Length: 293
Image (cartoon, rainbow, N blue to C red; front, side, top):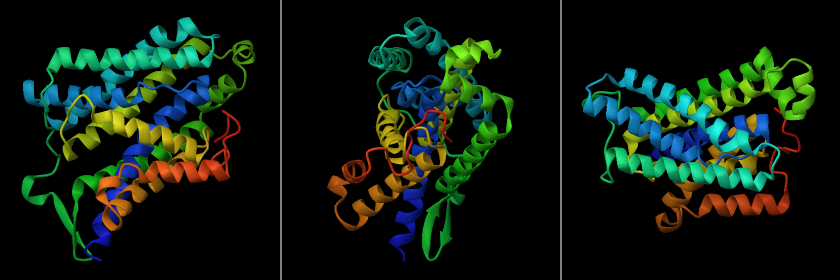
């Protein structure tokens, strides 16, 4: 149990970070049908903004987190104007390449701004109170914070899509952009909002995960790959399916590393994805429609 519980909690925490980033993928996909490969770099940039605010200017951690989320919301909206809007109506592959270009620009900007050396972002918990004991195992409080934050994000997104006018407009935009315009949906603003919200979610994931590892320009890349795998595994377009798949990826990675081989820990989630996709190409929960929740 002393080995099982840390692996379980760490796996759930990692899956939770993957879930938040995958939800960012999902937001944009549901509104535009496009997969944005700058999601991981949004997480990285969010972490760097928080590091800059706390280490360079002495801001409190909560204020730095809020700054990171707000800044990335604005950057996400700008990316929509630069990397998506001019290419609307073109091949999806062209837009995907455009988002990859945006990701490379963000990475170069980070190195130019903060340099190539790694940074660290402190945890919100005091040094002597960073773990709790559960079933004889010491669990980092940061992992519990990540899990709790993910639950809140998922519940809020479900309510947003199912209970608000915004959610109905996003579904209308996903189904048919021209019909949505005829119905009075401000499609330009909706696209910008979804890109901004997606970037903000990724920034939130970045500031949550940053205290658990070094903050480098590659911070969000691995998370982005796992998030994309979760989106495919859960069924692209299905919110609950993506969250379940993200948690499964986190758990498979941790238990594979703990009980099989830590050398191949990065491979196990993708093996899971390949097996599932071979058996069910649409993913565990379908995902045949962009408008599906």
